[in-house]
Length: 421
Image (cartoon, rainbow, N blue to C red; front, side):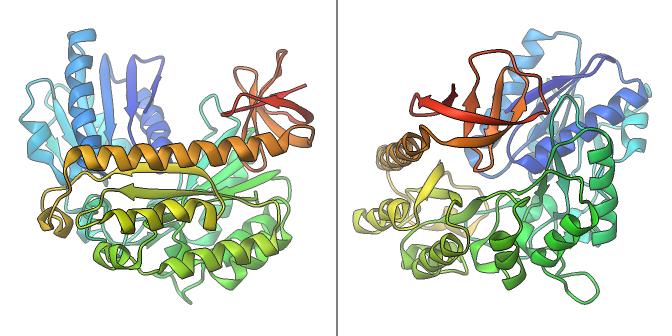
């Protein structure tokens, strides 16, 4: 969760993915341009039932902390459950995912007669909105949306109904936006999307993500770093493997949407890869780029998961060589097939999530310990910290100006971050 505040008095509170972060920055700019008054925008996430619960909780807290401020709710949870948020007395307006990036939406909200709900059928959307080319707000890293929506129907997920079907931004439009970001001072660009590796499937000629990555690096030679957000392992194409192997400006860090390590659970999730597919991909990419680091999303306690099935997810941490783990205790979403499956007891889910997190923490600590003594190129950020190419956080012992690419010797680690000499 992240928050920002514009000079106009609009605060944006963000839940969820990097795509939401990128969109929240655009919302801030549009709210500021519209001259919106004392307003709090809550950009919600619907990836789990817990995420929606946290958003409701935050809305109530904000209303207490900032009495008199208008609360505008948008994002995936608002799109999927508009009635839930419209029924909250603290909420003044509910705005759909298609509407939240329209400048006209925020201009209407600045008017005294703004409607309570501004929402359309996201499933009817046929094109992706061009990414915002404005400079990142106080960041050296810029998030550029190249795709939205999802055509897949995993049994635990409601995100397609919050984002619509998969739509891609044409390569020329993406490149233009990235050029603008680099000219504005961005030193690293992160490509984001709901289902990033499906990019191009709806465009003429059905290009793949690997072709887009190569085109960006070719067309924007002054971009120091290009990074990918979460990808679906089964959709990695040969051009992308080639780019990972040979393009040093493409960062050696991938976050994989794996979700489980047991084949039967993967089938019940309606995932399109097997355990062997995940292990094979990680081995292939590590052979192509030995320094590559993997993160992954894994769900703990999916319905019908036995202890033996869970053990195969736990083993996946070592077998894939995962370093950065995002663990989601299973939380049923009403209306999804998984919500109708036999559920595990809450304490079992919690305990399995704990064991996964412990395995992830141990893997991260081992990776960081192996970095001690190495020289690493670090992109500095605010707060005297920076990121290595493999996305490890580095803390500097002295002030460092943000936005610099510096060579640093790694002197130590606290098990979570690296410490520069």
